[in-house]
Image (tube, rainbow, N blue to C red; front, side, top):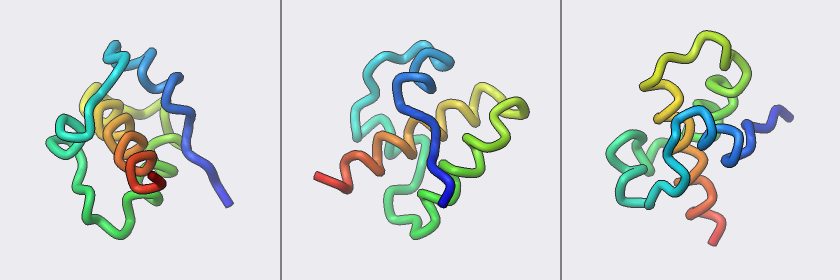
Length: 69
């Protein structure tokens, strides 16, 4: 099973140290059943990510972490 990048590594790329769950909802859909797959795909092909992709990846990781709690 592929695992997405660590949140700290992605935060270093975006420059946003702490993203709130409300802010993450603006960049990624929390109800998307394929949120984990999106995070894995953006992590796998990170060399091709645009600035918006990095924000979506960070938002997805924040939402996935919030789901666990």
